[in-house]
Image (cartoon, rainbow, N blue to C red; front, top):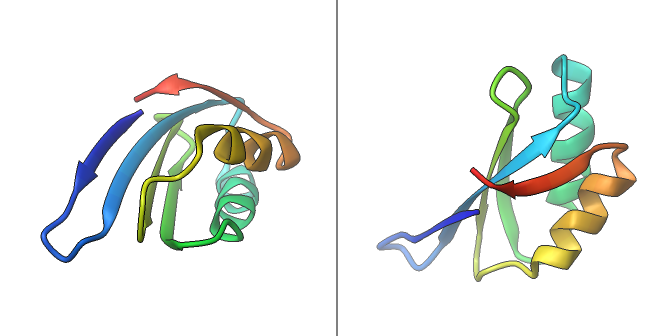
Length: 79
């Protein structure tokens, strides 16, 4: 994943997720990740497989992996 700390103190991370093919897939992944503590926003893009997450602090990768798994997809690595 790519991690960047913004000037406002938030952290932006980009993850690569396999299996997303439509808007419903994007919504499922975004919905699960957005439930993690500290997450401010999630944007999933099926065409690239990238999921951009803005949070108050860096997220535990295993928690993100579990959320993606719960949505029915696979976290495959950094974007």
